[in-house]
Length: 448
Ligand SMILES: [Fe+2]
Figure 1 (cartoon, helix red, strand yellow):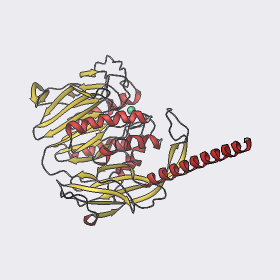
Figure 2 (cartoon, helix red, strand yellow):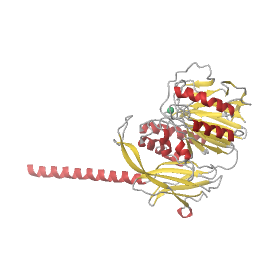
Figure 3 (cartoon, rainbow, N blue to C red):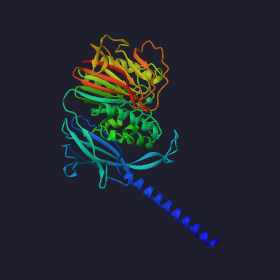
Figure 4 (cartoon, rainbow, N blue to C red):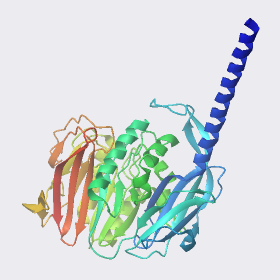
């Protein structure tokens, strides 16, 4: 009897071990298989926003090639046979990945892992057209996503987010809900811009997987304008493709520019601990000189103009001293800034003082907007963070920082921006993620 029991126990144990082994092997294989599919998908502008798009995505290292399959959206659905196919530049890259597969601590131990990164440059697109696309190779294809090219009209809109930095999966679930709220409210915008510090540690590949893949539906279906922050630094360009096949300087430099209809955007690289090097300053001056008759918006992670936590950091003071005279000289309209996780909007600043302007309250839909006309000077905006991190801002009494508004935030934010012939309007919303409630916290416009 005893020996029969022992045999059953042994058989039971053997069966349990067998089931466990099958589960582990199957789990491992399906995890490997899922990494064959494209992930970390991003879409960016090429050199000409009307006719070019760039793509970046990752796969496991076993997948050695990648393609973009795209076609005009005729309403009849995606048809592989009607697609134009562009081969990506695919290369093996070594990234740092947490040793523990589900790390919830801030600084996990990292080890090298090899992936294939695919970059594709699509050109000759039709302006003002919606396309459908899939990425990948063979059986390992992404879902069908969409992108659109802008028409030549003057009106367009975009969403601004910043500082989504976090390290846990739940941090980026939270950020995803902010993006989703923006998408629910404003749907089909022309692009999103992220003003830097996407993640807590730019070297940690898993954090990038979280920030790009948790909101995959939004990332793969929208064009993003990335700005390098101090946390992500040049690693940003490991995940976004800029420039063209012939000119990849934007990814090598970290700074770049693009024109969207009659607005020229200049994106700065401020990750270092000093002001901007000479080469970048002369790039900025050249850009501003060339576009002195256009409306100009500058994007920068580190905020030269702020009155809270980072206001007297050494490099911020240096940026303020170096950049303000250049912005003055070329009449930059607007500077969009990140880095300080609180809300700040300046008066128009000219030669360190409040510039002249006229001011009125106007209605835009149901919202009251502070509308500034005949503006002399540059307005500086920090829209706070779209992620879990917020400062308990300690405001400095600084004579030369002319805040129109500055306050701490309890919740994440995004800004919806519309550009028309008549001017530019920026509305910043605070999102209560838990209650799914949204509140307009600031609304202003600059009349052209
Ligand atoms: Fe930062």
